[in-house]
View 1 (tube, one colour):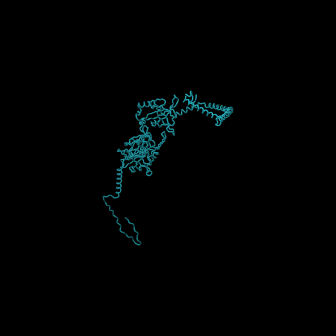
View 2 (cartoon, rainbow, N blue to C red):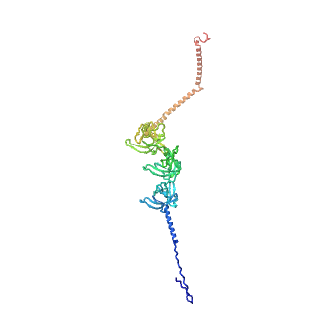
View 3 (cartoon, helix red, strand yellow):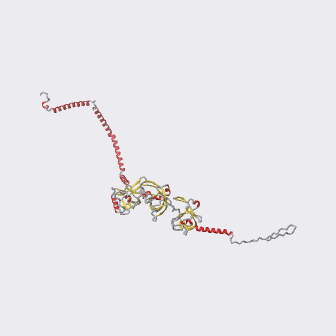
Length: 546
């Protein structure tokens, strides 16, 4: 190596320095690698370990289909069970028909038992439903997929997600029951179920029957309240406020304030009866429209009857009661109008369903024959012969509601009934008010025929003649009558003066009467003496000389 030249000192020759020796580099040879390669090797080992760990901890991959992927994001949206992460969303794709979305979910190793047949998945987001408000926590954290783990042992990777959270999860204790009714009313999934006005469960689902004649409702009753559901329990709609104003009067019934808003169902055993044996899981019950309908005993097979009325049916509506001396035997189902071309008149046919079992349950002694038998037909014909008739009556004076009354009218005109046809036609009779109206109308018609104008003219003429007669009497007869009355008064005055006590006539008459009295006394004494001495008529008195 060449070192830099040093400057020559002034006034002299350059001074020479010995050369500096170059360092000798000796390379050591060994079998250990350099530490530089250890760090990448450790990083690679850690990566391989993480990969192996992720593979070992990786659970099954499932696909869930939803109507919409609202709130879901790949790699961010979690899958949770009881707020514990058990997976995440890997990807979201549209289905081939674009009607739904396929959400691919990666589950953890610990959650592999959730990939079974009866597991249910849904998106948790803020919701307002019949059971209340849910999912408010997702306003900050975002939506996530909730899981209800199934109990099946059959694995499955394809699922159809629920559009709303299930009302009851698998881990809840209780029993499920099926109710069949005519209408859904105002209930919805999550609507409460009451027992003696205590909430004991909720509605879990509903569906329309295949024939479209009714609905099927699934309910869940939580433990320990499920023990009160017996085989003889009655179920009914307790939705809203039941307000009724009919021929029976005004009725108001409700279970709680919650049912007024979201509706609900209720159940209870009939009054005076025990709960009975506990109902098994998934037992089916009839769902009544109200409590009265549910508590009513089974009615059996109805008998279809039609009655033709010749009067106004204002106030009569479908559902009106058919009453037999206080016992409700059925209800009106239809009201029609028919024109009879022969009589040129309209008739009002009223169709109704009658339940003879209601009367049969209250009959003492010989029971009513079964419906549809020959004995029941003969009995009905005999009742019609003895005056069985239908009559419209007012059930509520305030509202004018009418009902159909069945009763026996022995004085009713004869009638027959064809009991072989369906519906059976029963004769009718007007009610008392209608008969009174007809009588009043007849009287009014007769009064209308009276010639009141002619009678008035004749009466006016008679009054004029009477007035003339009174005028003549006042002018001609009255003066003569006045003179006659004056003479009579004078005569009466003379008679009064004659009959006074101090008048001579009264004194003479009094003296004459006294003399007459003495004479009668003498005659009475003579008669008494002759009766005792009859011989004196010949001999004379004793002591008298001959």
